[in-house]
Image 1 (cartoon, chains in turn orange, red):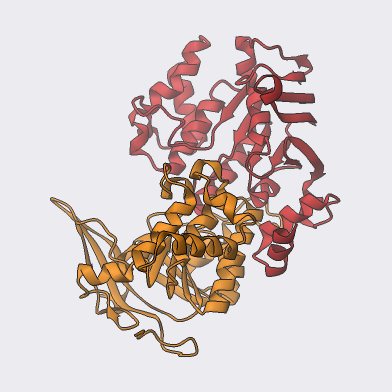
Image 2 (tube, rainbow over the protein chains, first blue to last red):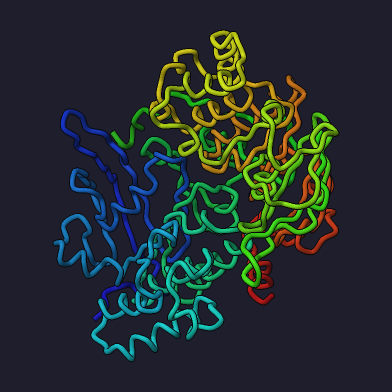
Length: 292
Length: 257
């Protein structure tokens, strides 16, 4: 039944060419994403940029989860066999959650406060599969174990305010994974977490990419993290991709914006009295030739 | 400049009481920057709030410039110590202009030359004079944090308490604010006590730092010890490793512990 390429298939899972997102307001319009192209295989792809660079908008555009006044255009926006531009709302609903799912930044705001976390995960399962309550509960407990929660039975009956941030984020991941998607879009999944917890949550995502061969789009502002965690990095500014580079070569980025961003980070490896400040060149905002 | 001895604090009464600070002692010299670093819930911000007078049921001793501070704070205390908060979106009154925000402390302390002082301070924190009669929502996040710093500086304090001053900002803006803080410290010979969860930020600005965990200070070390990775405490090392990069073996060790 599945038309998804097999794990050893080298064809990309997601292919995007010349993606534009325009917000139409009454008297003016604003382009949040301008001519973004990339492809995602079974890998960890990072989209990095400052606030307002359009990185989250790209993630949401893939699932067509933008507000009504946003117009998405592209030469191509495809996920496996699905044309994400033309797919009907009904079809999109089958893609969302089941085949591409999204992990959001803060579990505190993304979980329903009046339903136990176990019930919420089970609900996600029952939306996508025709199973009874009992089976859904069983599957949920397995899932909680898979994200390294030690006493799943106990955690199942907790409400979101009773779990810590790290555990909440694991609950979110469990909920997103229970339908076994092929692609996960993680929008700043760890920026609300402590460093030691962050590492454990990342390890879970890392295992998923390795073991299940899913594709991960990791949206982040943290260059240091991305450098050691992801395979490839897209650096965005003003709605455009400034540069695409393998994460291990991040130190050799060419574009002055990417360089500036890297240099302005305080480092644990060297001492500097003054941090170089990013001087924004208006040239960077201009539409690149290949996108025009 | 400031000395904290055996600071302890608990919330709640009787059996439900929970101790959040336990035997906190440190001293910060003149023109020194001292950092408090740790994970959420370790009590680092609570230490600042005790010093700032936002909690008054602590025990122990805090003295500023050799004078112990009491439970009820005098007005003069606030001319010595001011605080900058984490979120510049929440710490400025949305319906007050920058002018009103900056002149409030001057009026409370009956300082004259308000006009001159405000122009001077805006200039020092790198804001254009045109900002003066704007509202916070008309400024960017970095500009707002500059206003918060200006408000803290306008009474010429000797000590600034900085509670995660850059964690709500983009990295490029963070660099600007960190540079500004370093510059102001040099010019005014200020002391800072700065709280952050980000080891790299703390190590950048601070001369010495304390690593906190569950209400206690685990280790006090200077910057070079941190940057060269020669810390003694095991927990400090874990934090250091976890902050440097994503590493599967470190993650597995953490999950196993």
